[in-house]
Length: 573
Image (cartoon, rainbow, N blue to C red):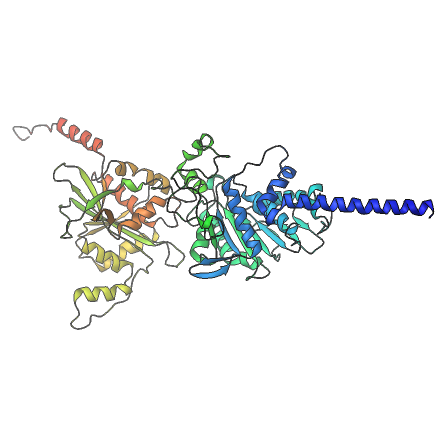
């Protein structure tokens, strides 16, 4: 055999041996990067590609989020409202700094394209501003174009076009792409197999207006699912912090809750709180057991969190995933003093004054706020002489100004008639009924356009009523400022509400709980009509000198004792 042929055969054997060695190295590294198809191991392996300086800090919260994303890739099923369905809708509420953007928008798509052999998948990513999604798209592009990644999965797909140029769209040769946009950005017709929504609301300073928040939640409810290729098969992942009761998470839970797996990871553990619908990770239970345990102490110990916890709204929304602080925001739950109603059902005090306070809806349309009425009885405790202001009734309803007249049926009792007729009452009828029932002496209405109309109608129709109507102008800054102005009435233990003991459990009257809940969630609640009514009532009672703090009362009493009225002249002039 000629020497030239022998040399060619030797070189060929070496090339084959080199390919076998390369294949073994690739298999070994692939196993390191993706044992058992695990996204978490993939992140560990490629962390240095994106973060060459900072170490990857392990934590169960990241593992949990990875498990949910893996379940979407595998098309696992979950049980929602007693029904089995594919896990292809995920809402995750996690604190800031929990690698949510890196995990969902960078590592997960790269893991599906490469290790999972799904390079055909198309991702459409949204945020409140496109800068965030483009930032993550650039990291995704850097990862899939890195030598370490291409060494393992360069044979599966290749990125098309100039890798350094594309951060709005990253496309591969298997028809897959990852597109970055914002809620109001370009690409109206773009559809994908995955819709990724990361931070749909502006977090900084929670400066988002109610109008902007409504526009965002409408997009989430109505337009977001239209970005999917197949509504039944393809997936939506929403990941965010809670900012308001009426944010995108609130809209999803209220209107689409039977479709979404909901994952909630508060920074501090709170017992008996929902964790996740997905049972494939820790049987769907938070791994912590003691109240106050941190979710990621390896990365966020108490020493770095204390400054954040001092801001109650920041901590409750962004870190605890509840828009209102536990126990209340401005108005704490334990500021309400409990009054046990006697078995007779009658209050054992004689009111000094009884006031009703009305906050009217601006319009009657369904999307607008409620009209809210609260009734207050002012009295002094018979033993201590302490001034008390008791909530004796409350409601909030969406009503027209007038209802329709309902004829009484022959032989019908008063109670039966009222129950039947009240279904057709308007605002004026409900106000009149409540004021008569509760012995109101004065009805205070905010001096607004509809408040003025309501006052005129009540005075016209019920001019012989035993209670008067007062239009109260709105003064004292915005709603926050006006609410702060009555906080001291609560902290002086002056505000009371009725209830009763059922065994070892205290139960507020039915009308009390909605008032307490709305006030506890203010100013992050969906509605604030009852809050406005309460604040207006307490400010008016203070103006009359009926709801003033003990120090103020003592000062006034001392001033009256010191004041001596001049004697009348002995002889008239």
